[in-house]
Length: 195
Image 1 (cartoon, one colour):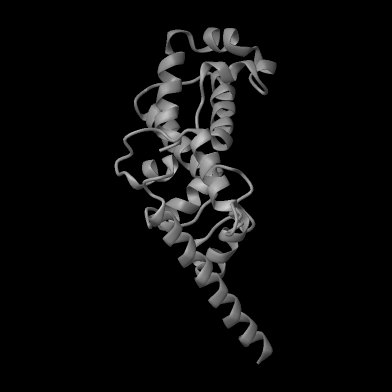
Image 2 (cartoon, rainbow, N blue to C red; image 1 turned 90 degrees about the horizontal axis):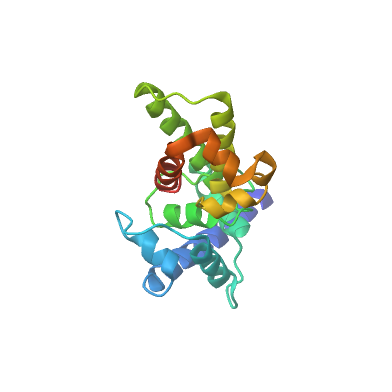
């Protein structure tokens, strides 16, 4: 009896929190750049890390003081079968997954890193189907780019000067590994993985 009451109370709190979060997104859709982009379908522009950070800061601001982890757990309490990655919400990019789920643009709440991994695998399969093959060294670079994008939303040439890319030889090595294709590959991955 006590467990059922606690469970019902937890669900009511989770429902109130998610409803308030969804109302916040709707109310601020024209004031917060990341929300403007996420509401536009198809997206007119790419999300930038600074836009997502501004959104995360707005969500955490008083009086709300929400965190992605708290919102993630609330959705998990309500829709356990639609939420993957218990305890997710630790990466800044998980805010994107939360908003897309809140806007009913995605049927499942999945950590952004997992979404990027799925899109990467699909892209790799498409490349193979089109006869485009990557060497083991290129694959290592592509996987490092994928991981970077999962945490940062995008990749630029400047990013090759920082870890882990600097340890792999930096922009010079990337240019040698991919040749003329480097710019095209980066553009494709920016388009596909952060979609």
